[in-house]
Length: 215
Image 1 (cartoon, one colour):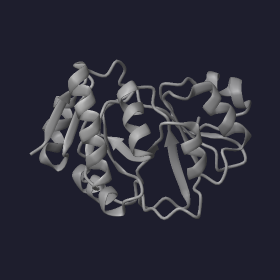
Image 2 (tube, rainbow, N blue to C red; image 1 turned 180 degrees about the horizontal axis):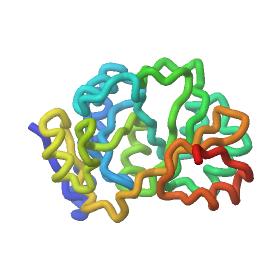
Image 3 (cartoon, one colour; image 1 turned 90 degrees about the vertical axis):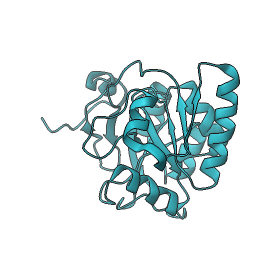
């Protein structure tokens, strides 16, 4: 049976975070609020948990799962290097709705799908998400919806779509803003915007200078 916790209630929030962290360590799935939309998450280093996440969404390995972190230090451990651009961007916009595509640390044993040696990393600006990530370490997190359906902006919407495939639902109330994160690829010589989102292009240019876009 899935369990849902109302994180507006301090007692339930504490119980929910303990339960969710324990579920993640066991390789099961949780739904958590973020600063964009609700996410479905699993331990990033348990391949069977990541596969269960992809199955729950009905999503293929050709769309690798991003990783959420609770600290910049955790992000540094996942990648070859943040580089100058990555460090400056993290200083400017993390925690917040900016996803950075970086070269993955080759010494890590994980399987997020067909990543071609890269990883998409973000530090979300949501207290419940950050508290959970500080307990669990990096989590593979994708939007909490079936593939092709609208991303969930409430825990109830997520539960409607994902049901019993998720062990714990952390209910942080309706999302304040359902605009997705901006995705920026830092694996090429010139940073490239792969998805426009909550961080405007001109603000990114203010930090990195020249940006490639598909326009």
